[in-house]
Image (cartoon, one colour):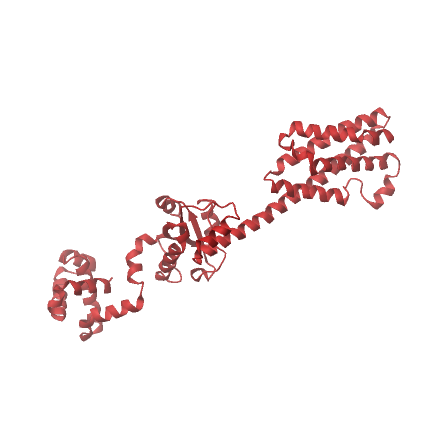
Length: 383
């Protein structure tokens, strides 16, 4: 047992040297916590082996399984995994280091044991002890690595959500830049707001830029929880629309990134025009650029109602059903610039019917239909 204890420092040094040689990314890291953890692992494994070969393993086993690292060692391995995540390294290098450490430790210690007459059965027990111990350390490091990634991911996600919230609040640029500076999010040139069904968010996120912002705060258009807002950076509009073609989405204009609230406002208004089920449309995708006229016409409902009342006042003197038909005909007449055949086709009526109805319209409006200002009001009122 004295020989094994005496070999421990050399075994630890050879283990560290082997890891540096076979895993170059740890050349500098092993001068710190990882090197100390490896040396401690070798010492604790040797202590368990001494207990086994000295005939006291049964007594030791009642107190603590010698195959399990002490709490301090497990905690060190856990912290090591967290440190690896903070340094930006994956678990692959660390697990490789553990495998190499187990192999070298076993080779060196078993050589000393054989040289001092340890039998095959006891040697097999020692092998089980060493590799079980390394497995425990590896598991602790993997847990630390995963926990750190989860924690840092949550922090980053909260900061990105804060950026999105400030943008949608139209916060001062300085306030937005201050939060951006605390993240690894690079401000884009532009952002495009789009609203999708909540059950399609994950799928949409796989098709757009991974730095897309997803606000956490509840917005009026999203209050029912059935829809979600995404702010997509620096995307060609034609490409975005093509990517979203199979989804139920409403896409706002592409604007300078600090002005993204403008894009969201247009999406919100477009959703309002299509009612509470605005995304349940037969054609799925809605580009707000395609409904600019509707957005303008409905921007001020009260003003539009007043305009309609004034522009269509001549119809107040006729029956409601007749007024509806004359209004429909006048609208088509204005849109088709008086081309009777086209008006008839649009209304699915005979051209003679169009002629008769427009005769009635001229009786009601008289010479006013020749006034450009009246025609402009009628076009907007009937849009």
